[in-house]
Length: 277
Image (cartoon, rainbow, N blue to C red; front, side, top):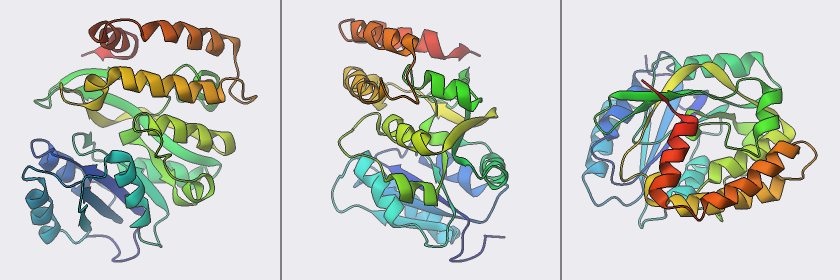
């Protein structure tokens, strides 16, 4: 069974750039989902490795894959937004995914089921298992699942793991796409706009394996990530819906991290957010 042709309920959108090492695992994790009525939009961002050949080979085997290649390197935010424009007009939900991560088999099924039953929710994510470059589980990260707690802590830190997110397409049509000003943390900024209008949450389950590596953006561009994080927090800091005195205190303390060595900041982030396996 390959889903209803040209009438998918879910559009899985995955940008890729030079991830030939992890790409097959990522693709197969979507193709092996228990929920089958989806289209899988893969956009190669002008990779210089064998990624495009890998994507084309998979597309020949499964007609749910819609393969595209940028004519120049547009970077990830513009590529994600391009994916939104390429979706089937009939799809109802958007599953965000990254080409170095792994979706567990029931991810799409459980998220669709939740959104179908909870129409006031615009976004649903999940907990994440942390894997290394060899795909071994080295830890985990749990997120708040209660909407009120998520709102209370939004200014402190990102409450949804981007590659675990499923969004209603009508929700995205209302609040807009990723803001291309943010080359980092674009998901964090979008979650605020969604949470301003709709409920957002996380399933109390591990549905994603999130890969950490020496080459990922959070590691190589940590200070830039922190800069954008502070900029986004500043924008929403005193918004009535998200305001908390502890959020304000945390925001000013977070500025101190900008002056610490990168390796110290990264270690601190992992200590505060990851649980070891």
